[in-house]
Image (cartoon, rainbow, N blue to C red; front, side, top):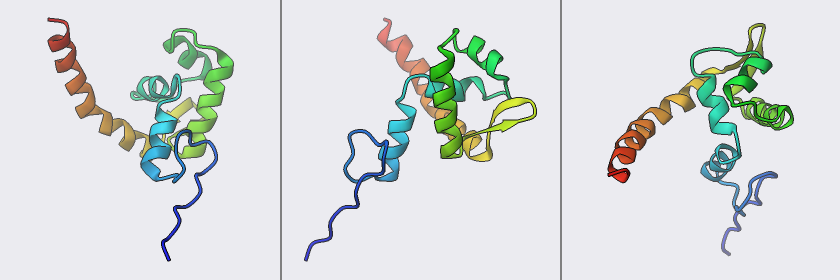
Length: 111
Protein backbone atom coordinates (compact mmCIF):
# COMPACT_ATOMS: atom_id res chain seq x y z
CA UNK A 1 0.00 0.00 0.00
CA UNK A 2 1.37 3.42 -0.98
CA UNK A 3 2.01 6.00 1.71
CA UNK A 4 -0.13 9.10 1.56
CA UNK A 5 1.54 12.47 1.74
CA UNK A 6 0.89 14.29 5.01
CA UNK A 7 -1.79 16.96 4.93
CA UNK A 8 -0.57 20.49 4.42
CA UNK A 9 -0.01 22.55 7.51
CA UNK A 10 -2.43 25.45 7.88
CA UNK A 11 -1.25 28.63 6.19
CA UNK A 12 0.89 26.95 3.53
CA UNK A 13 -0.50 28.17 0.27
CA UNK A 14 -0.10 26.03 -2.83
CA UNK A 15 1.10 22.92 -1.02
CA UNK A 16 -0.70 19.74 -0.18
CA UNK A 17 2.37 18.16 1.38
CA UNK A 18 3.41 20.89 3.80
CA UNK A 19 7.08 20.13 3.13
CA UNK A 20 9.42 22.44 5.07
CA UNK A 21 10.75 24.15 1.93
CA UNK A 22 7.20 24.92 0.80
CA UNK A 23 6.31 26.32 4.23
CA UNK A 24 9.43 28.50 4.25
CA UNK A 25 8.91 29.79 0.71
CA UNK A 26 5.27 30.52 1.51
CA UNK A 27 6.26 32.57 4.55
CA UNK A 28 9.11 34.39 2.78
CA UNK A 29 6.91 35.14 -0.21
CA UNK A 30 4.41 37.12 1.82
CA UNK A 31 4.48 40.87 1.34
CA UNK A 32 6.99 42.66 3.61
CA UNK A 33 8.43 39.46 5.14
CA UNK A 34 11.81 39.62 3.41
CA UNK A 35 11.99 43.38 3.93
CA UNK A 36 11.45 42.98 7.66
CA UNK A 37 14.22 40.40 7.90
CA UNK A 38 16.48 42.63 5.80
CA UNK A 39 15.84 45.69 7.98
CA UNK A 40 16.53 43.76 11.19
CA UNK A 41 19.90 42.49 9.89
CA UNK A 42 21.93 45.05 11.85
CA UNK A 43 20.02 44.81 15.11
CA UNK A 44 16.69 45.31 16.83
CA UNK A 45 14.29 48.06 15.81
CA UNK A 46 11.24 49.40 17.55
CA UNK A 47 7.93 48.95 15.80
CA UNK A 48 7.96 52.60 14.74
CA UNK A 49 11.55 52.47 13.45
CA UNK A 50 10.82 49.27 11.55
CA UNK A 51 7.75 50.82 9.95
CA UNK A 52 9.81 53.82 8.91
CA UNK A 53 12.54 51.54 7.49
CA UNK A 54 9.83 49.67 5.56
CA UNK A 55 8.66 52.78 3.70
CA UNK A 56 5.75 53.43 6.04
CA UNK A 57 4.13 50.06 5.41
CA UNK A 58 0.76 49.55 7.01
CA UNK A 59 1.10 48.98 10.77
CA UNK A 60 -1.49 46.20 10.54
CA UNK A 61 0.39 44.23 7.90
CA UNK A 62 3.73 44.75 9.66
CA UNK A 63 2.30 43.44 12.92
CA UNK A 64 0.81 40.46 11.10
CA UNK A 65 4.18 39.65 9.49
CA UNK A 66 6.04 40.17 12.77
CA UNK A 67 3.65 37.76 14.48
CA UNK A 68 4.20 35.19 11.74
CA UNK A 69 7.98 35.62 11.93
CA UNK A 70 7.90 35.31 15.72
CA UNK A 71 5.81 32.14 15.49
CA UNK A 72 8.27 30.75 12.93
CA UNK A 73 11.18 31.47 15.31
CA UNK A 74 12.95 34.05 13.14
CA UNK A 75 12.10 37.22 15.09
CA UNK A 76 11.84 37.96 18.79
CA UNK A 77 10.67 40.94 20.80
CA UNK A 78 13.44 42.25 23.04
CA UNK A 79 13.76 45.26 25.32
CA UNK A 80 15.25 47.11 22.33
CA UNK A 81 12.49 46.19 19.90
CA UNK A 82 12.13 43.46 17.31
CA UNK A 83 15.28 41.56 16.44
CA UNK A 84 16.39 38.46 14.63
CA UNK A 85 16.81 35.27 16.63
CA UNK A 86 19.82 33.02 16.04
CA UNK A 87 17.67 31.15 13.52
CA UNK A 88 16.68 34.45 11.91
CA UNK A 89 20.33 35.47 11.59
CA UNK A 90 21.09 32.09 10.03
CA UNK A 91 18.26 32.63 7.56
CA UNK A 92 19.58 36.09 6.74
CA UNK A 93 23.05 34.64 6.14
CA UNK A 94 21.56 32.36 3.50
CA UNK A 95 20.44 35.47 1.60
CA UNK A 96 24.01 36.76 1.17
CA UNK A 97 24.90 34.59 -1.86
CA UNK A 98 21.50 35.28 -3.39
CA UNK A 99 21.99 39.02 -2.87
CA UNK A 100 25.41 38.86 -4.57
CA UNK A 101 23.85 37.00 -7.47
CA UNK A 102 21.01 39.55 -7.70
CA UNK A 103 23.56 42.39 -7.87
CA UNK A 104 25.40 40.68 -10.74
CA UNK A 105 22.13 39.82 -12.47
CA UNK A 106 20.79 43.38 -12.25
CA UNK A 107 23.90 44.68 -14.05
CA UNK A 108 23.49 42.04 -16.74
CA UNK A 109 19.73 42.57 -17.09
CA UNK A 110 20.17 46.33 -17.30
CA UNK A 111 22.60 46.17 -20.23
